[in-house]
Length: 187
Image (spheres, rainbow, N blue to C red):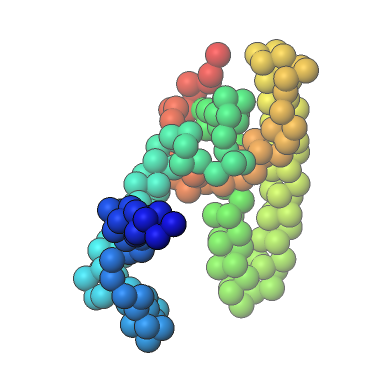
């Protein structure tokens, strides 16, 4: 029996010692190794991040102005919306001059003569009513033409409102910027 035990001790010495081969670090050492600043920002990193963000925003602004699909907001995406934008941008609309007329009415209301201000407001309200009628007719035309082009079952909702709101903006203020010239109606 003693030989068996001595042979087992000889076998144990041949086996590699288990473990990691180093002492376990103390809790304080482990915490010190994990310690790092809460905010890993340096002035250079902040400046680089700000420059990258500015570059991305500029690229998105230019892309949106040019009508690139991936930079457009959800309300402007899709082939039907693009067609409606081109249709609205190709025409002349009374509603795009409402803002300019309002500025003129404000200036006319500063004239000390109340009759001038009164007639300026009357003209403004008459113009607004005519512009709204034009927007309603534009919406009806757009719905009819989109149904003919894309199919009535595939026509998106809200295209008439989209066309009316786009026609209300002055051409140079529209985003995405107009891609067609006046009179260049889409197919």
